[in-house]
Image (cartoon, rainbow, N blue to C red):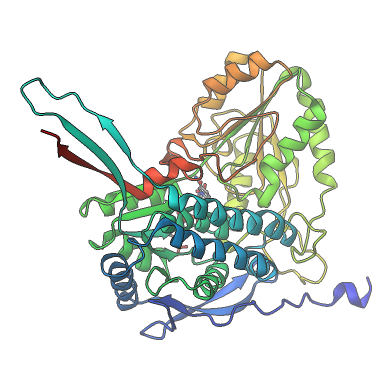
Length: 503
Ligand code: NAP
């Protein structure tokens, strides 16, 4: 090895102006001065000290958001005025695309290539799309048929913002999942408090800088970093918050529903998944293999919608598995800051431990470890970093832990099947219902299977494709409510019926 190869990876400084809370249009440290380091999974080194918001800070953020909603013009502005500001946000996202992508890669190990071409691209799209919708949040007029003895009435149903929305987001798509909540909530005239995941605060800080520069009025958007148990819990229980928009694990989501019940909050729950991707013998195998690969190994498997159960018709099982192994073995893995690299380290130490634990479960339960299953260390990391190989288990059954539980990492569980009915039974034989895929050249079979899937999304001959206009969300333990599309406005507005006596 050359000296260059062995020289340690030097991480660039995070491209943020300051690691601070953003409350009421001001940057500030935690009131009690507490911070915690954010660790880059690329080298396991601390890259910034992030404030841990105190109860007082959270209280201040809630007061600011409340005041901005109740007493300031945001909710009462015309949709066109909100549209202008949100369009400016989209333009600034594009201006700072490199910085946003770098934050994401440094913090959670996402390949910088994807961070820029997918995450930042979609984030700008989200703000443009909902900026466009801001002037169109209108109501309807209904003809009503009251009993004959009543005088004639006319009813106008208008949509109004809910008030203060708390957006609580996970670590795997920090920017996109913040945007899916914040953009429609603001477009509808709500004010927002965002709590990003503790593992990935950097891009939330950069986004707050963008809101600041875009000229969002003070208090309309606030960002508080800190732990779920402290900051998140306070937001969930606080009576002045009207709505919790949550994306994260099913376990935490259930706790949030319980904890928000006393204050009767509206909630949207985007939770875990364990999606089935079905390949029939009549599929275009090259395309199915590529889709199976990106279905599970995109974003290192840290995807709620990951096609983590690959169901393959028995007659083509070996051909598909061989093709997939061949595909995986060619993937560029390593330092995610390298624009050629598509597969970097897992987001944090906890994720790595969890993945390693499930690889052990897979072996104990009798599945065959066909590929991967080990940590690896790219050049320049000197035995550091949370890198784990893409891993494929075959000879699995749907009852195994690796088939039933969300691993949220690069571990694929392959299950053979013999008939369409069996494939549907296996796919639906599970608690989660987020996404699904089906690969076949038979269009009738494709629709039959798609209609039978107990999941919020079914991709036919593709996988993991998204558009801001298409609603996304789960069945069963994968949650409720939808994000993206116009449907999401249901989550951020309520209706008011205004009756007029025409007699
Ligand atoms: P997580 O542990 O559930 O955390 C999600 C967020 O909730 C974090 O900001 C976390 O803060 C916060 N939190 C934790 N405890 C809380 C509490 N008691 N009260 C309020 N907030 C609390 O999830 P994660 O590990 O970050 O993300 C992975 C999970 O997200 C997976 O299950 C994945 O499937 C799911 N996900 C779902 C979708 C979807 O669209 N359905 C999309 C992406 C991810 P801390 O970080 O400080 O703990």
